[in-house]
Image (cartoon, rainbow, N blue to C red; front, side, top):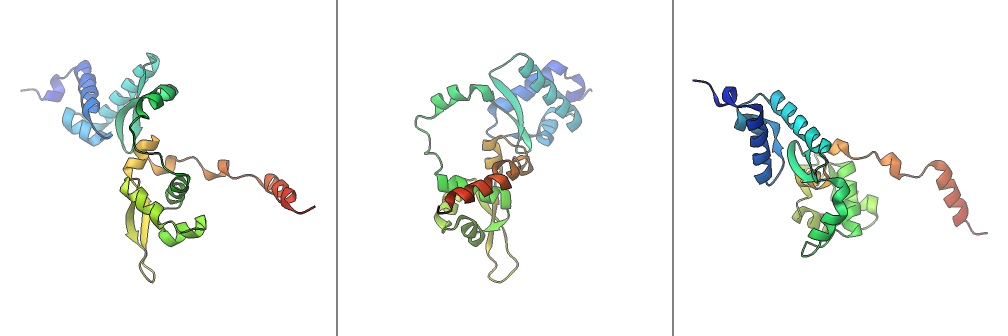
Length: 194
């Protein structure tokens, strides 16, 4: 008797991937898809790549994205204005500037302690870190082995999912956000009393 995978056509496999991803609440890892479809992970990867390319070629309103170590459907990035209008009503309030700043510090410097975050920001960040933990974007990842064994924080897969990233290493480099030495010199000159 042939296994499910041997008897499954390419069309059936594509449809099965689409169906699973349609009902999934979070990105589905390749290993899970391979297990469900009784296929080799490499074949599932190729299948997902083919699906993603076909959606791009057809200029669909959604894409198949690899984020947080798995695959999911998400709206096409160029349709963001329509999606924003649709989902803004009744949603959780947006993150404050302090929360976004703290989240960026944790994302780029993790694992990091509360004291280190406060040192970089120049203000106490306990409340902001608590909020980010409650929203599921930041979590305790370890304890500092030094004196006091401070809690160390890092980002979560939910943050990767919300940012549309597969790995934290996919964050853009900080160099693009830091002004060069000539800009810093001009700023210093402008701030000196005349």
